Length: 369
Image (cartoon, rainbow, N blue to C red; front, side, top):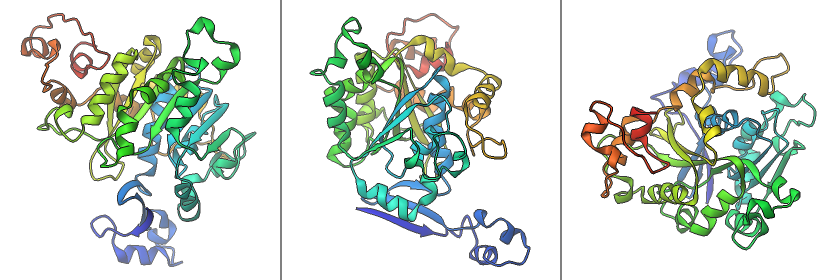
């Protein structure tokens, strides 16, 4: 079931200020009504999926770090993201040639179109060639209402030609792969059988790897951030998250990283997983804020008056994503089979060298990278 609510939280906004914003009296509130309007909250089966005031922090944080890290993202796929805001952010990149969104629930798309139009509003970039006022009318956007598992298994699974060796690819097969793939759907800890499949099905997760180009990047929203006193994911409610990380490592991703964004309005800091098939691409993750800003100025389609079309993400924000939190480091080291780099003398000692065999190691990132 899909629901949309308008909510005015008295802890964040006063009802009197909202009423004042509706008047035409020259007051600050009436001149800036966007700061005092009720929040719009989208829920799927009772679980918050998106909010008006968390829109930019969430959707910009799940899209732009990967897009700006990839040297030239032309083809992008989105799994889920039915409200349209993930596609909206992807369309802001001038390098983009095509974005394919695979959403199983057409009801989410239609309801968002009617009640959450700002999520699908691309008017800020509509003056550019090929763009449109409505995001899904952009000539680069391809909305497909179908099962993502079937789509990727059929097109990139073990029985498809795309998963054969690179030498056996023909040129058309390679062009159908994606530079960036974003999974923006159910949380890994949702009590839903489909959620478990999305994060733990070996054939499906392998097909995501095969759907990416050689320097491709996978992005997955992986739910609520770990707390400092949480058990290891593998022994708690985020077992699916732990399973997926291990699968991505085993499949062949060269580097896996988790970062947090605390302004998504989900009641807790939210985390995104990013996995790199190529080490050289991963090196671009650590660029300076100035280098990221320069790249954004070259790539992001500007508004009509020449301003950036981004509302939240910038080089300084990217800097905050580059280092995993201490909570994720401690969580990682609470695994039953503790990784070698978790030894106290290595983590907090004299910099003793250690061989890290896993593509995911917040210890290595925080102390040795």
